[in-house]
Amino acid sequence: MSQIDLSKMAPCPFCGSTDLRITDWWDEDGEYDAIECCQCKGCAPADKWNHRATSQEARS
Ligand SMILES: [Zn+2]
Image (cartoon, rainbow, N blue to C red; front, side, top):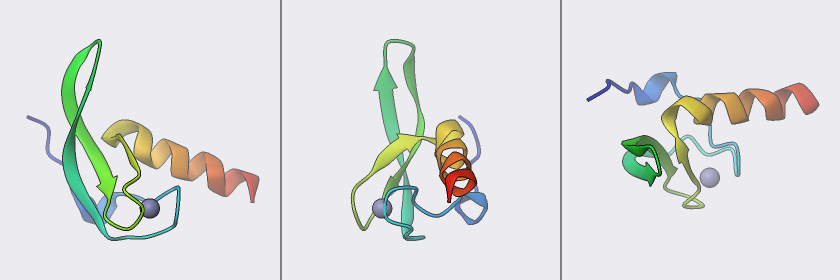
């Protein structure tokens, strides 16, 4: 199981909230850790969460 430090995760890329929690995500490759936003219920795999936030910042 991977270690996730929520304090190192970017704010929600959907609504900007920092009220996040760790959850599980499944796809054809199996199960892995994901981040869920407690505000908007947006969810993404942990490794893509920061990537999405970064790409959004680059656009603004
Ligand atoms: Zn959110």
